[in-house]
Amino acid sequence: MADSIVIQTFRNHDIPAWIQRCLDSVRSWAELHGHEYSLAGDEFYQLCGQDYLARGPKNPQAITNLARLVATRNRLDEGYQKVIWMDADMFVFDPKRLVLDFRSEQLSTGYAFAREIWLERNLSVSAPLAHNAATFFTPAAVDLDMLITLIRHIDAGRQIVSNFQLGVRLLRGLQYSLMFPTFSHAAMFSPRVSQALVDQDAAALKIY
Image (cartoon, rainbow, N blue to C red; front, side):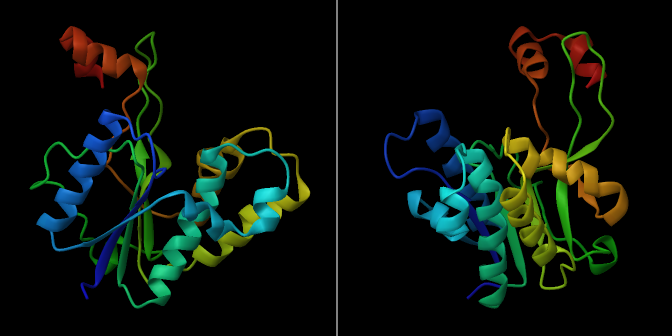
């Protein structure tokens, strides 16, 4: 068994071609770097438990925000030393140069989330912020169980109006206090960046 594993999820049926291409790119990248790879289907949601699934309407993102952390805990408990999560729509376009092998001194908390810079339509740029489309956890992750408990607590005691309550906005609220590191390997392309790539808009891309 390898000491690291990459986990993803997507539904078992009607997989769009572009999503399949993304999944294949992550699987190939994992194999290239010696990581095990696990792709779960609809059963992934059951990791949250029936109470979480039954309490109020939730979209797939709100469910996955908890399930990915529970899956990470399970894999660490199985003995993996590195658990990497990537969203299904992550595409690895430079697999040799994408290396997630952080030294212990880089992971003061034992884990890290990816870092996002968002380019708006007016070409303003956000400050670098954490996002959970890609994560990296080790057995030393001091906050993993707390994050799982916190999401369950919020769900049990608050009305969930958006998956962001249990996802990126929650992370960004905690980032200042928890001081967890972020990594720039997994960029988030806003619609403005995507359009700039299509249009070969060098001025916009230079800002990004």
